[in-house]
Length: 412
Image 1 (cartoon, one colour):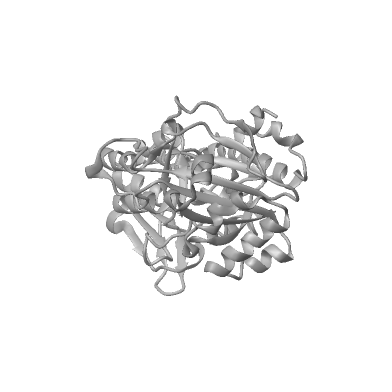
Image 2 (tube, rainbow, N blue to C red):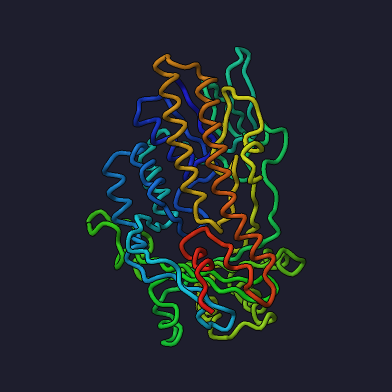
């Protein structure tokens, strides 16, 4: 069976690695020319995502991932603040958590290594269709078409493959614009160094402004103490922060800026909303080259609305189907689980116990349930942020990631 994967992000590479490991003929195409030149900062992999990865990659890759990951169980309890930095509550004890945080670049490099020479970079996919024999075919802007037994779109929120299958977009803007960046913990003053601490936190202010501050330390809080295997790009305690505002003319204008100008404009937005100056230090002292803006898009939370096409020899996974805002911290993990699910069902087709179309249908049914679960959690937080004004009354309904789950345990 020949499988072509469109997209070399986390989900596409995870699938490519699993297919190669199981002996399938596979090719992964991505428009990037360097796997390390990717957006995003860090992702959380829960126990389910890690278990899926173990099915997809060799044990040595898993060990290197753990050696490069920051264990949540070694952090202090997450915190919940208001715009003045006053502590409102804590999240649950993370001592029993099996989840890890890992640099997105690190994970992508490990998965690319597992795919090996089956990964083709600098390939611009322009469309999909079928050849004269009825086989799925991928079209390129810069090279000859490629046919396969199965084509899988793992090409993200603006997927060419999913748009072809659905006859239009598979997601839409949520109404939130996000901004993110990196700040070394040692660059903060003593006060914020103590307040933020070795933990993640979330602050909410008026007019639906929010600031998430994630703590990442793959060296001091390593999930596996094996320095010889470590390849994390984060080598000291670092805060990966994300600011969120309702979409508006002002926030849209900021997306045209970069570097120091974007950082200054973002600080201005917070100051207009009355945030205490010390709470903004993590932004003010960020590496200006790390600051970026992006729109939150999301698919429908209804499982029946996801992958709204008849099963066939072209399918899709990850954000191409269930585009998920980062407010649940589960999007990449869901894509990895998609990849493992598809590989499991393809095994039935390969050994003749199911047709390829039936295998894809079974995979898509599971993906719809999985995508709906993750999207429901993510959108609870999005809607809560958008509804928040000068009070935090709705906070007790939020039950997503460990830090956001702190809102369900507020202590006023």
